[in-house]
Length: 242
Image 1: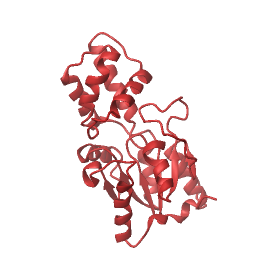
Image 2: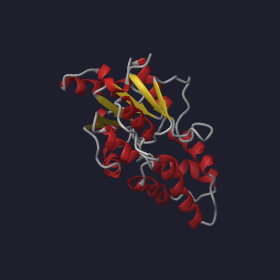
Image 3: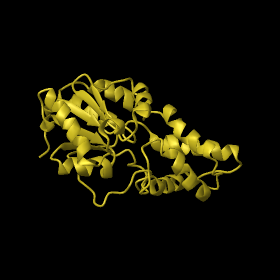
């Protein structure tokens, strides 16, 4: 039986895909390039090509790697492979939006928990994401800080060490994420309690996120971050916002 939502002191968050709409950011930028060059792109096709290119063995850190990724996927989308468009895709990360519920839900959750960001993005991009989300985080770990990327357990171990220095342990953490591959599976293997935010619940497939080798049934499951915040309020006996 899953632990009560009220039993945790920390919520750790995947950021890109859970809080920030990276798929919308990528497809929106590609659509803009397409419009300028006299063509159109299908969003799901673009995400499928992105997913394959992003996980090449020579992939770099995100979102800097989007320059390389663009050059790989542009021919398949009928777009010019000019480097300047790849740089435009990379730089678009600075203006990607949070999901409509992210900022308000994080503010509600921050009243009860310490929020920790865990992102495979580089620090420069995370700073933009954090501002978009209202700077709600107690601490943040990026690929630059950890020297690795999820689902590497070493990323999580650095977070455990931080929480340990504050006098707590991994049993005090609820890990919240949308990616089965990067977060839900590995958090389960490390003995964490997890919460799957199924952002693509209304769309088939895994979009821009790599498909896991096997599906992990989460401890808690919501289709929005607002759903998690509502469940926490309900567990605490508070009135859920209309």
